[in-house]
Structures are given as C-alpha cells and as structure tokens.
Length: 110
Length: 114
Image (cartoon, rainbow over all chains, first blue to last red; front, side, top):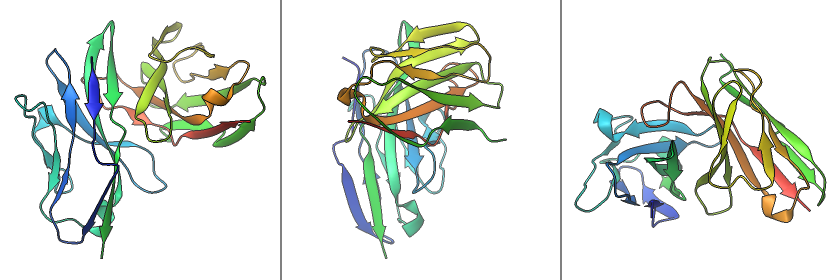
C-alpha cells in the first residue's frame, strides 16, 4: 500500500535547538518526495522536493531508500519556523497524485 | 496574481442540503485538484482535472461532483450533504502533473454539516 507516515503530531523545541521532523513512506515504485509547509494564516506551500537537493530556509531533507524515510532537518530552529509541516509522496496509480502525511505541528519557543 | 482563490471560506450546511465550492486560478495551469482534510489526517484527493472538459475521480469522490468548463474554474458540488463531509476543502492547481510540478493551494474552505 502507498502510505506516508508522520509519527509526531506535535514537535516542540526551543529556539536554537536542532529540529528533525520525521517522515516514512511505503511505495514499491521509485519515490518522489516533498515537504509542504503551512504557516499560520497562510496557505499550504511547497518547501522542498528531494530531487532538487536544495536547502530552503535552512531546512534540508535526504531521501533514504533503505529506511524509506525523508526526514526534514534544521540545525538551529527559529521562532518563524513554527508551522504545520506535511510530507508528501508522488505516486503513479492510473494518474499521478500526491499522497500526504497527517502533518506535524512544529512549535518553536523563545 | 491572486493564485488559487476559493470561496466560501466558511459554511455551515444542514444534512441533505447542496452547495458548490468555487475555485479559480489565474496562473493558466492545466491541472486542478480538490482535496479534503479531516482532523488529524492528511489531505485526500477528491477529484482532479488535467484540462478544460476533462475530470476524473481521486481517492474519495463519493458524494461530490465537479466540472471544468474553463481552464480557470473548477467548482466542487456537494449533493445531499452528510455529516461525514464535514472537513476542510482545499483547491489546488499545477502547470503539469504532480510529480514534476509545484502544486499551488488555495486557502481552504471550512465546511460543517449539521
């Protein structure tokens, strides 16, 4: 079955602490993964995708096919990073679609 | 550019009523989507469209209908509303298919069926 699991509903850290938002996926094909973010009172938007191997706002994510994971990391959290983060998997099952995880709320405290 | 615009933002419906959620995009995107998000769950695809005149079912289409008469508009119709349709609805669009293109989302529509 195709599935995205984000095991933590809430991750609470202090400013300056490292952050790791976990994402595990289940997919028999070649995975393409994304992280989307929703800041307070803003719409859901793309943060990064694994094929770009980019760092956005200090966040990085590495695809680990052996562990079927795509964890989102940032070495030093900032208060403005507080948001809902969704991991998404692109699959082709008749049509190309995104499967979203349930999301993790990141709260960064001063 | 307004991007993806959804209306209404909030709505309360009685069981059995019908309504249409409006969605428009001004980015000339071919692909448009409707998702729903139930509390504590990820977004699930209801319907999608790859261009004007072409629509198809997603994962959870029952109880909904869509049309795509123009590139810009992709309304979602709820017929005979049920409490199980209480959810947050997101319209989205992309230039091409989901794998290679950024999906742009609307702000969401909160629907409660009582």
